[in-house]
Length: 85
Length: 483
Image (cartoon, rainbow over the protein chains, first blue to last red):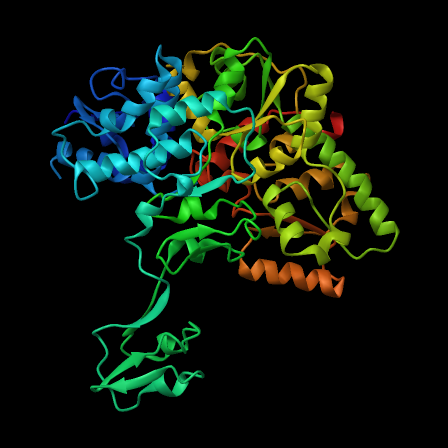
């Protein structure tokens, strides 16, 4: 089965608007999903400059799915969905 | 760090919009449009009854962001007028907080309330436990007479059905000194004679009703002028932004400042001076000494705990020493302290070497408005590299550790830590002051916020991650004994 790729945006906007808290995923994801999920940090995914601007930051990409106003819970929910859990 | 996700998101968004408005061609018009840009016609209403109320509340929040008190707004003055006044003002206020009263309305008064779970039992432990005769039985159910109730909560604990509850007012409950109260009109107001500017109420209110009065416009005006503007960043800033503090320096310079100093530089002076003072006091036979770097604690001493003054270190704060150095090196510069909390606004106001204070959220908003990617920045070194201990000042235990490491005889110190001011820890400090003894300890480190400055009301990162990032970074910094 293909791995689920999670990219957490560490651009300034996402970080300041709440993305700082998503660093907890560094501990949670390996513990919960082992090697089924690959987590990486991205230096600005460019999503804040498209149409919603900063008001929907922070952003996380789970495969091609964009999670806006991301929280740890929202990201885990999306991962579960993609894993078919 | 503030846990009120949406309320804090909203406050930051408004700050970004205010800064963008200032940077635009027409500040006054853009400021006036903020509520309409955030809640355009036809938009689904996220929180309140209708879009008009949403806009009214956003307008109030914008007033605070422009630096004015919301309480004094009579609703006839437009945001463009406020923007104009903000541009024209030359003085800032010493009243650092303001309450958005329209948000207070939804919050019940602080009282003890018998819920429908009351079974009208035979034992009636609530009635027998009440020392004030406030509970009577009406129609087979317990009823509390609010005029007699002292809110001691004995009945809450006595009821076997857990039918009696304390209705909380989060701002009142969070305040360690009883300075914020919902008055008879149902609105919360702050008694500035009592307020120690700890900022707990700003973080506690789920409506985000308590705002800091921002100085961001005054700072942007200074940056726009031809004067040199210098940022002084608090030690706790490590871990609050992406990248390291060298990239952060470049980012701050790119956002318009002329130079950046680490306040950890002043923290090293504080630690060394405090260590000498500690040795002197112990030799004189004093039983204990408390630290003096926390602005919230210093306000507490002044307003509520003067009896502890003889035990408080006379050493100045890291900000004091840093600002003194900056003003000496750059006499014409305008200094801006970048702060984790509102208490430092009070300290900055009283110190002529500190012209303005901006908190981490405001600096973050400035980066967003200016589209600054910290991770893309080159590193800029600081003129003076600070020590590991100076950089660790921002978390609970860090100050005591730095004093210890600055002593000739490290074993002479027995520190104890007051990790957060609340009613209990204030009582404890009072006991130390009146008895002149602090059992088993001779250096009391006092931090107003739980966790230290990384728990300040305007921090961006959560404490656990922030602490980890500080430790990662400072393990490569020089030891204070080598500085």
